[in-house]
Length: 489
Image 1: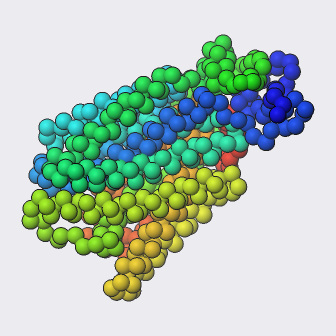
Image 2: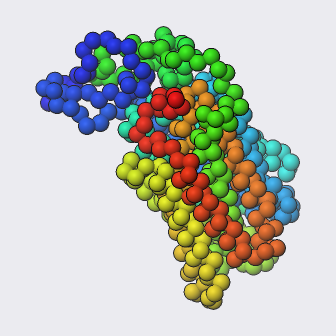
Image 3: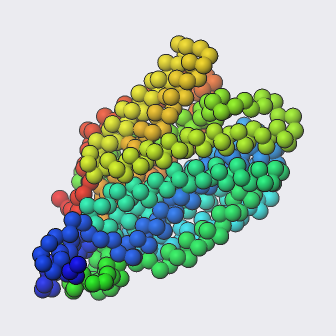
């Protein structure tokens, strides 16, 4: 086989993305169909995917740990809701504050910092002496995870070829679902081997060492050349490009980056709402908000429905054995639903380049509405038929949300803004979405008691339909598009 060589012989002043997108040809002139990934690109992707994995692992493992935490600290319903919302509120704060700092201090610096913050609060969580500090430590975990929402996305999207960017971002995001499945598995295994009240501490403890390894490994990745060049640091950008695109045989042979267009405007949050960015801000944030309303709302239904499907839990806990048995049952049930989340994200990865993010998100919202409609219609039936319809409706909802809005809102939020505003834009979108999640965590049980299941499902059907309409009305297709052209008008 002939050696691959660069199709450009002479040094040309070119953009960062054109070098990343460059497709080599063999010495006989035969073109290679795709741009091969370098070792550094794979390292960046792997470490970003690990962050999403830890997010799913810890958040879903908290659901398994909650009954034990409640028993140890003697918590009531209000405290339950606070624990459930603490990490979500932390994600909101982290996304809007720390995520936006990646536009100021760099993608890599925040990429590293957030993981060390995550490890620190994880260690503190394992030794929580009381309920207030437990909430504080969960909030701290959420802040770190919130920063990871925009930062991990940008580390991938600003380092990967345009033709493969969507698949790789969604592939990394899919590790959130894999982490969710693993979180329930870890919770279940810890309960089986240590059926004691304090077992929840070991659930978090087993994550510390792997997370620390990932935090240290992030020290070795490259800084985003896009960000460096946008800051006027051309020599540093070229040096990081050489590390990022290091291959054997080497291509491109030489690097000479063209300076970016001069833009003296300060990239403040107010720029997100100006005439040039308003469309992108609405597309990135409003559908994500609507998606989180439905996703976190349905999560409250899921344990009861799955318990009905896989077995019968003890209605009144009489002793520790009953508590552990109920918790194991909930963990097995949660694992079932998480499998379908993984199927949904696999579909998103396979279909995004063919249909585009906008179409998948629109279809996904419509599919979510259909699943909720099936669940709502179950009230017209009784017995096994009713349970089957609720179960089928929620399963359809979870598949469609991960194929569509849950995955695509994350992808779009990190792609529709220009480089100087990308961290702030993606951070704002993630924070705005988590307002919906926090609101749902607090209000859903109240509304469920006041207006009933069918009325509440009808509201969520409406929000899914509105999500589809907003997505299509404000659509900006980014699939395969060079990120340097985003917001360049």
